[in-house]
Length: 317
Image (cartoon, rainbow, N blue to C red):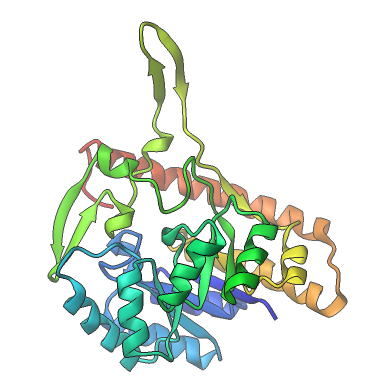
């Protein structure tokens, strides 16, 4: 049966999504994942999250998918030892070096190659497989044929985003935010770069600013670069038939009620397909449309907050 993976931006969200029917949850380790520290977890929160997951018979993945600074390997090992000691079921990484450390130290710990690894072909996937990765997250632009080719060639599990956003580049390969604004902080000894999700901080979403293309004249103005949200539905039955292993919902920064409801809709959709071998897609489309409107409103509010920080008009991220 396909795994339904949900976000856990707080202990309360972890509880809510398991209650809604998630099979597993991923939570960011403070200072080490591709989100603001507001939506990451400290040690005590991670312990609580693991206990909740296991009480529900589910799993908890720890996101440690920010690119490390040189010299932080020892700090990573300390984090890894702690995560293993509290019973984390899997770890999400995108750095090959950290994968090798994890594989050598805890060969029984499942490793997921993050969307930040931006794996695009079977040979690249094989490199991560040889470094210890058991599963990879497929980029939003990847076709199901490409996913299945990689799975057949490497034996890796396939994780697909069913709620996320597209990118005008490939997810994990955009550095635009850090050119717009970048601020360094020391977070308990960990280098934390606000403005660069690839280095552990939040993305300021500069692609959604008001852009203009100019030279000798203004060729275009008042436009945004592609960064569209999506909720997959029609594609899910075929993904399950073809052998996709995990369906992932992004959203650590959204409200608990919204993510709870999203997980609930997808849970019912997947269960109906599993029971009947088919599903009435139209019966779910209206529900998702309503949730998408709420999601878009929350995302717009968050985007405006981030833009203020990028322009130096606010500090809270």
